[in-house]
Image (cartoon, rainbow, N blue to C red; front, side, top):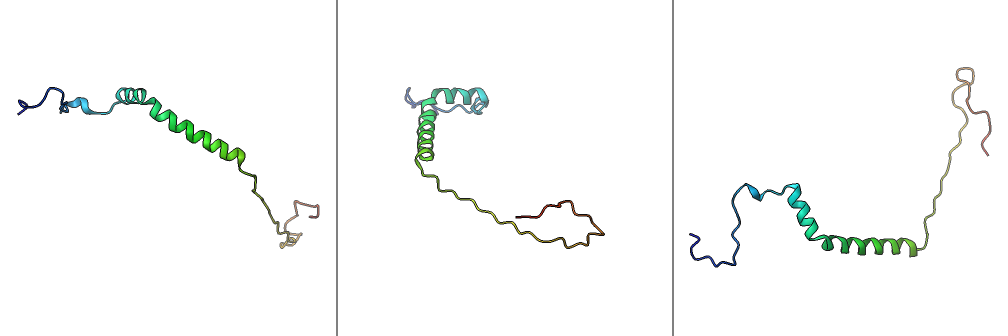
Length: 85
């Protein structure tokens, strides 16, 4: 079956060693570190530049609805005695 295969062709091994354990994953990452770091650094620099150069345009507003006490004061004593301004 493997008699006519050239010497430079690699045939996958069908044994149990084909699993992707942590040490093999670490070796792959170590071998391809530049392929991971260069895009990370480019995206980080672009995001930082955009955050620093973009004009601040956020505006926050809030409204508070103040109502008088609905329960009679003889049943429940109010905890807040100051008036809202």
